[in-house]
Image (tube, rainbow, N blue to C red):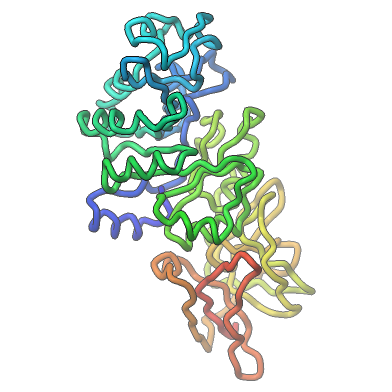
Length: 385
């Protein structure tokens, strides 16, 4: 959805007039800067949002409820008890009463219109707005589409929800709307699930359930993926999330993602020689997914290097990695023989990076490999190194 490729974004811009998301690793401030660290913040206040922006977030995550008279209210909870100390069910209370409630940091409860107007003059700030059911019904979508369009912010808004029908309604009301489908814990990004949800721009997935294989499958479908945490998240997951190849993160701790602590290093004219056997992984780090074994003494073109929690990895293809301890990295001359085989529909993404190289045997090129049950398809360039 955000940064999967500049080329893909340019093509989408030409077709629709808007980018799916910005390029680069997208940091989405969950309720602004949800948890206090070196700030004293309360969620969904200007202070919380400002802190998130200062800490590197380029998108603010905003939860919605709706008042009894139809005003869209910024609140994670359906009641005001937790943060105001006064119990009101938002859907049963008029905005004139709700707007007077204290909400922390010396600020009152806010409407969505107030928040959007407050940041409209800061073009770098984008908004991820979560839709909810109101008393078990989908009723906020029309008012939301009307408000966003009236403020001219369609290109700066992403609609997120656990409710598929709500996102589909937003796409009807605003053709070309960007959407992020949230997955409950226990819902897995399988190939079948992705195939049934090609209509959404991206997915928000609980981090412990995300694998490198799922990331690759989502990218092959032309979509993007953003992990989200439970409240135990503290930003320590950052190195593993970068290494898995996700497009960004929905986080409570924006400042821990402000700068990639394990930036990759591009390798040129380098080959990875498997000394015994090596496992090829989708992604690197803690949630990497084992794809297959690479045979002893085979040689593969290495394109990038990354260190994750003191473990060094080499990239041998589009988000395909091996541990450095499984072989030897050495320089190589220009290959003398190359045969390229295209697999899968995502030719733009496949074109963007070098793909892993396999040694030709007995003058013949190995067959195209189908990786695991997840049906990970890549463009394979098979060559003698």
